[in-house]
Image 1: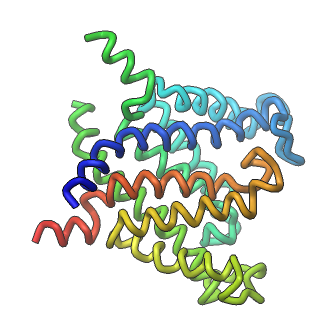
Image 2: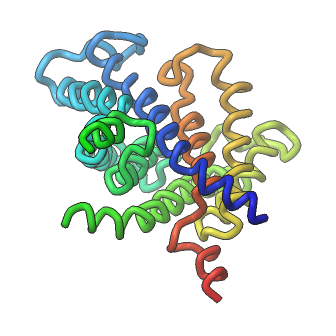
Image 3: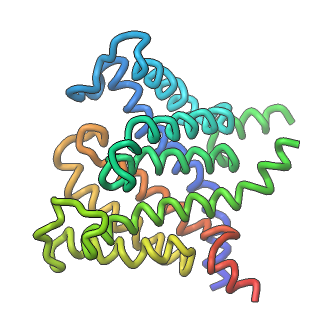
Length: 136
Length: 132
């Protein structure tokens, strides 16, 4: 039992970084599909410039890329968390109270995952940590 | 100053993430077995189908994760279920999660995998029991 505790304590920070990378990759798709049509999705891809979705796509692309490499993780995560909260309340919440019926599961989950990273940082496998080490 | 706030709050935000992801997960279990919230696609589901068996896992681990009881074990099971779900249902349709509608499964899988190692944080029944 003691050994399991040690194993968990050693791996939790690395898995925090892994979660950051996966969440960023999934998130980045939303930006890329809206801006560049890759991967292509009917109805979502190639948004007109300066529309609401276009601005969201800029946040998602830049923020997703920063989260992926773990640069300025906390500030970025805070902005992305806010964007998802905003998206949930204007896009999904009006349709139904339940995320399962308003298709807002992902927005809620992204919102809280990013909120966690805003508080906890990007973990050991990130540019933030590398830069911090280099500065010392 | 800001660093201090973060250091104090990070564990609590972890608990918040556990609570919200658990609640969202539980929702899938209750939709399948209690018809609440109602989802038409689950109307003719049987318990011994893939969807039905998944629903049992979602119901039980979702409830445990929401309150933070046996977090590591519940999270590990839920993570495994999402991995199976992703590779059997979503992955065959397309490589990209945004196209195969598997974003949620991927995200859940890694959130729960992290929780399996990090535990449920200070706001959980696990933490309450440990304090006694």
